[in-house]
Length: 223
Ligand SMILES: Cc1cc2nc3c(=O)[nH]c(=O)nc-3n(C[C@H](O)[C@H](O)[C@H](O)COP(=O)(O)O)c2cc1C
View (cartoon, rainbow, N blue to C red):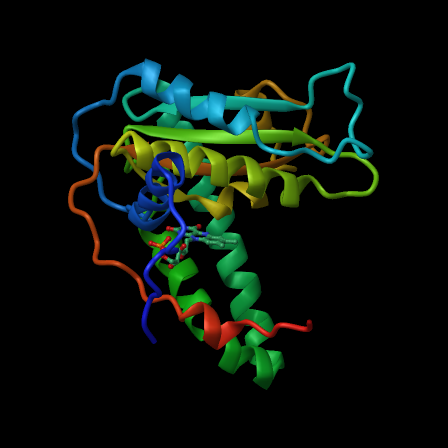
């Protein structure tokens, strides 16, 4: 598989955007240096420009919140412990289900290993990066808060890439939306908000480009 060269038709803005798209990576290891808070605010601002499900939310009452937890804060230790315990339970539940279900046993091998690692060492991104940012979106009808959060996080990710900051998703965050202790730290009622999260900091190293197929390999035109 080979990446296409980005388009022949170009202008300065579009070229700059393509550079950001191509430079975005999951960065999972960070320097100790803490990026300025202004950068984090710029990233959050990018998240605010993301689309949202207008039919699902009450636009009179703002429906997104961003909670930035610094690596060196007291609360980070508590949050990391809550996440580790949650992942331990998930890991045990998944392993039990895998014993009952041969299809799952085969399919979930790699996810199960990941959960076991997190259960032992803690969740990557929570306490391992200068900032762990939780994004909360009020649940609505239809229940599309996770899709909406994904748009928001993607905007944040691209902004982080444009600032040469490292970023990775912390999906385990979504599993803690009912957790009383976690939600108390976030200042929200458990179960009322969908959650997702990310880790941000200066990259320790830039991983190589991940492979993407050529457009022609994955596209069918119906003219
Ligand atoms: C729905 C979804 C959940 C993900 N969750 C995590 C996560 O919890 N932790 C993580 O490090 N990466 C997570 N990723 C990132 C992918 O592993 C990553 O995007 C993929 O390996 C391609 O690498 P790249 O982001 O560097 O292009 C997630 C991606 C998606 C789309």
